[in-house]
Length: 434
Image (cartoon, rainbow, N blue to C red; front, side):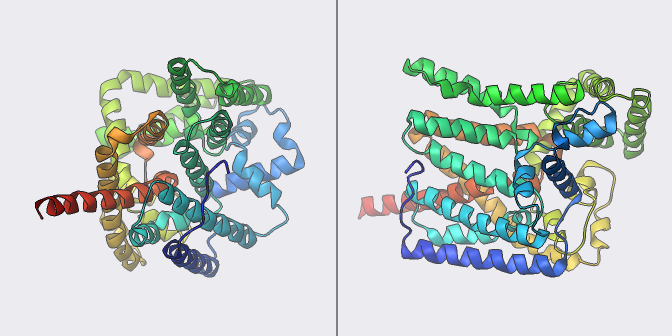
């Protein structure tokens, strides 16, 4: 088989059963809560609708229509469109089953890497709350996580051209699932070009992601007369990255005023192309002016986001939020920590204590596993490590538990292997002196 799947042991089957039970328990809680969507969910559903009715392929040059049409890539909306006659509860049930399948594949990856401590794997998984949260929302994070798991299985297998073809397909699908992944296509092209040059070999699959990317860029240019991957690019720069930067380095009122001034001035451009170019130029000008301080801010906030325990994630079970009420808003602006303590669901935050402890343990043991196993890393495995580091760095000020969710499966596997490696290192000296 292309992924090299094997039969699970009794302990591994028990682990999958426990994880499945937690998935279904969270699914029941989700149904009772009635909160199936975030603000972004409506954009995915909108894109799914225009795919079904064919409007996705129409030209729209005015800003508002083109902005909505190109905001979300097509892969997850295509999934939603395929189940368009289902209600949201049914769609979330299908996502739950796929989440369990993802857990099965992660167990297969753990098994392939000679993992033996299944109990730790289970513990890390069930305390990775974001996995359950976003698998059972109309959001694309669970799909990105599934694709990354499949990619990891391929990258830890023996290299051949058939597997490489699927590596390239999955790389492209990651980009068409979440815009943050699309620059990885350039990394992919460079990295594997070096690989084939060193091996004095070649595969036409090398160009598949790049070809698909440029076709999609051309398609968006046809629809809007502006070559871009997603309209979310400018929004993230203005509304989040630079807004948080200016809130942190100057003040929140100044940041609010700057954002308003950019959008107010942009109103004089009615078509999508010229307004987008104007907004992008304002963002670029701000970054150029404060390049060093912004670069440092972007870097340290990206790293900081790794340690987000997921307060916003847990609150989705109880109330719909607007995306401006989590820890990021407190850390990146002048909001007080008292704001979250006043919340009527403050007792839920107690769950963040074990979640944070488990998160720190995952990160520590993952780093230990990578560092101590670096001598065994081959060219393909190293690509996976670069992918993780690149993703963290590119997210910048918006990095959070939600954005890190697609990589939680890898952290679970690596952390459990790290514990196993540490146990082996502790045990070996004792046996030596005996």
